[in-house]
Image (cartoon, rainbow, N blue to C red; front, side, top):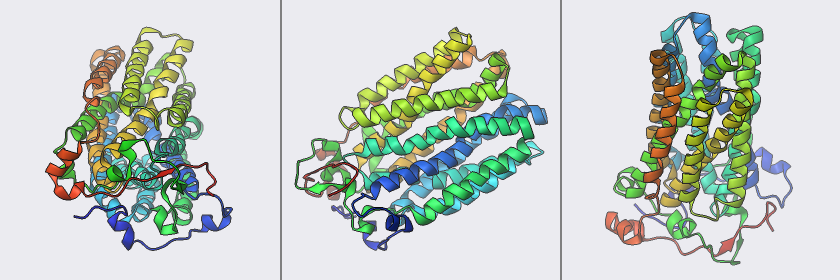
Length: 462
């Protein structure tokens, strides 16, 4: 296994000049087009898939007479299979690029989304959600984040913050649209309409915009001007970013387990809250449309907070500190939802919870890439994602079971807060392994590229 400044797999990838690049000004750094493309992909895939799970929870119960836990179980299986797919596809993305996995993944999401509105038996919902999960695992988190980590290093947080805005916009725009269509026309009409958005937005982006690595276009990472200033973020130095890791070697380090354990806990709590939010607030506020609007509030908070953190903090300060702040805010917001049942306080608490959502996912990607670099990001992030996705699958099931048993969401949401606070401790151990430890794991890993001596320009490269 050889480590050097150019990722080994890039040397075997063909040069590319996508259609979108021919339409942009010559001075425009194409990496920002990649950011927009990744954001648009996440908008439709997460808006239809992930946020759709929360919207469908109540209507599926009402339409078929299923219990909360009945629908929560296949919802939980979605996260399990999405995680398994992410772990399987991650190393293959590192070797072959993301595009060849994104296309079939989006096709599977389209098919599964259409099927949700046609199911008659619970086993059919299991099948639809498993197919949806496999498609999401192939085309969403690992593929998108692995692409962004290759295009951006010194400005990675800002790029991820902008691209991840698509995730939140999926909640802001598509959740209420989905809820409106269900109330007016039913699931059988709403789900094909939502799937059609992926067809007309997602597939053209993969075909005509995306490029896996900037070197395929002869471009530098970040659009950097050479020899301007030495990078001050050691974790994002070329020496750290171009190390080659296997999952086995990464698993011998403390940071790998620190990241996995911390986010496994917090995403179990977060996902359980999000996917039951609509059902809880439909009871409290008296309308599915109003309840799905709170998903828009949640997503709006996610957009604002992530852009602020990504632009002004995440590329400059210790990511562990930011992560702890997000965990504290999330746990406290869950407690406020329990304590105050008035509409205004509910909206405020949901907005505050939203401040954490996008940042938690962004910080998971940033911590993983800072600790293990971008060359093996797909493999490492895919394995961590498998664990966090499985825990995310347990979250909705656990919340649903506790609601069925207790007849209230008070105890489940208290559990959300406790778990979130518990995730704070392990994150302090998530920092890049020391050079001597890396050398002990594999002497070849210590042979790294020279320090990058560049600084990021604006969006237009010179």
